[in-house]
Length: 149
Image (cartoon, rainbow, N blue to C red; front, side, top):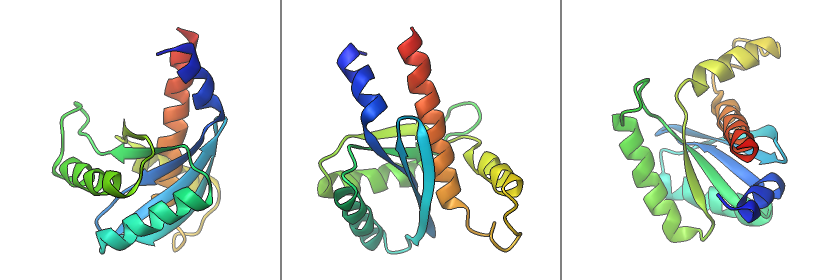
C-alpha cells in the first residue's frame, strides 16, 4: 500500500453496501466516521443498482465498500456468489473503485448496536443500513491498522 493510497483513504467519501436479495442497506463514511443512510428494496437488482449509482453521483462518493458474506472460516457462501454477481453488474454502471470486505458478524453486531441505541423491536426489523455502517466501520479500522504498519 503506498503512502498516497493511505492518505486518500482517510479523506475519501465511501458508500458502504450490504447487498441482500430482498433489501440492501447503504451507509456513508468519511474520515473514519460512518452513518447508516437507508434500506432500499433489491428484489429488482437493476433498480437497486440504479439507486446506488444515483446515490454515488449525487453524494460524490469516491469508493464503494461492499460486504462479502463469507463463512466463519473465510470460505465463500452461496450468498457471496450472489454478491459477486451483483458487483459484476454494478461495475458495468459505475466507474468507481469497489472493495469487497468480509462482512462476517456484521448483522449480529448491527443488531446489538440498534438495541444499544434503543431502537424498538419493530424498528429492528430492517437493519441492513446499520449492517452497511458496521461493514464501513470495520473497513476503516482495518485501513487504520494498515497505516500503522
